[in-house]
Image (tube, rainbow, N blue to C red; front, top):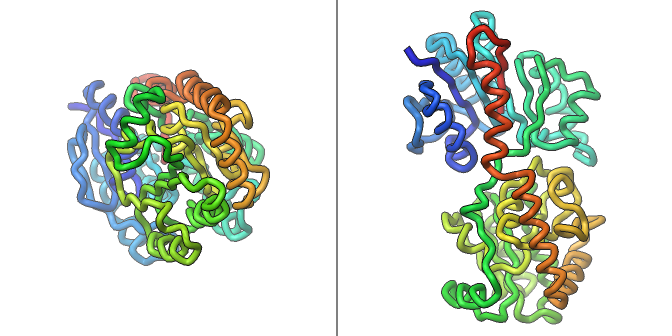
Length: 384
């Protein structure tokens, strides 16, 4: 009878976007792979998928139902390993797995960026810090994805069985590939742009944290000085219409394409000239790693996730403060220095190849998983 692993997260798209190589690897090892999350998406490499009522907000009553569903599932199925992701998915799963752990289930939790961090709001520290610190003791292994979170967990005495760091979820450099300038001009035309259009790219959910309005304000400073600039915004979310209204108010709606949800980001990114990061908080942003893999220079705000990836003036630019005028000035400067853009982009791709490729991250996770998979060896529980 195959051993079973359960992957949990708040929404099922999380696995579609970030974890299919790891589900596939467990199937190749002969394990039964199951997923519990909110949503009805079909996922490959999954034997059974369970719809769980989970809400992103810790204050919604639906989470009580989700907790009971997870508790019943874990106790009934007797998984060898439970690996949970996302703040609410990780919280509910670790609480629900307490009895299962006493019977041998190992729980792994991956924190894709703590909600509390240096420079974070007092509300995030007040709400999320005590929750994560308490739940660490219900984790056989706490996995973090950046150095700041690792140092914080160690310094503050998070009492997980062990604390590990891996380099995010990884990027496939064979999918995200740079193209030369001649091909870029041709590809721009195929997407409806002019060869000399200066394309800025940002991908992410439209929400307050991703802060797309910061980019729109910067564009307002650029519209006269860089009239061929275009901002491509990929994603959906509750701030989508607000940002469209802001673009109209600032007179830059003709310079922005609101792309919605896209499945062809790997084709869009290589035609762009700069990728932008505007978030207040990031763990280790996949969208930025994808741009780096395409050899695109990055200009980003100053937070732990961007700092982890970007060495300023080596493979990108980290703004010293969140100032939209300063962002506009940096974009204008890079538009005038193609040699610098090329150097930053080449170094960005080298960074991905050396530290953040999907194959490297898979090997990091395999070394953790194997400690729990093999009978007779010490087991680890990882939650995400």
